[in-house]
Length: 276
Image (cartoon, rainbow, N blue to C red; front, top):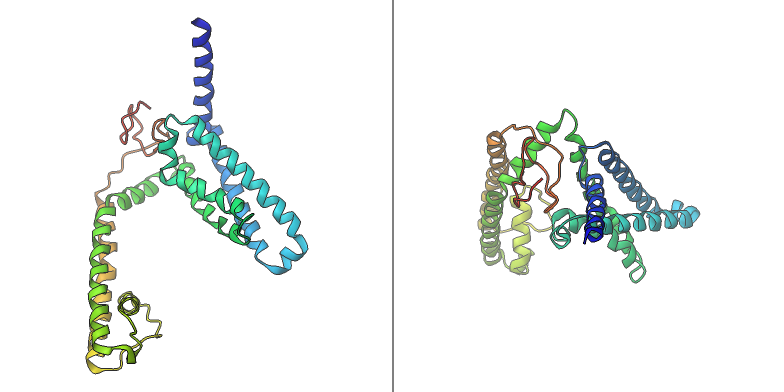
């Protein structure tokens, strides 16, 4: 029984050390791990970009391919280690960063069956968001955390707002389809909704435009409405950022859900209740 407990303790200690290095940035080892990881991510993106340029791919194709596969294998090992050292691997795999980590390695393996799909590895740039964990050790922690809390707090309001905008452009697109018809280039309701989105966001490609006076009047109304709508998301986020408190937080990650952003004196995770 004692030997079994010793083995369990050794496994637990090994996993704890690995978790500290990979998921936390409060230690020197964790910080260096994040810095090296970010450098490798940026290097892999540069490799893919160079590979897309004919002058480089023709002369250094083998070297670029070797670097890409080497970095992909490295990221694969890292992903497996992340799953090993967390208490709930399935929960991590379904989290935002867990999905991003998986998507970051799939394109290279997929390129064996679908040539050219390896260019999708630029999604690895999303992994650079982990740099905020390194910044938490510096003087920018307050600004970075306030921005993140503001965005997270306003996500439901933004979703409701976008849903309302979707309803508006669908109605406007349908009206324009009835007013202009196929002769004016509004060949279907989806294409008319596309025009409404382009006009409402003040992009104005000009590939479709109303020719009838009533249609032009509706288009003018949509353009003016666009200016009012664009200001709404900025206002929502600004209000939530002003409400965000300025408590000092650390880069410590929860061993249960791997979430960060805990107060400095926190004992339990505020997301899942796991002891920190």
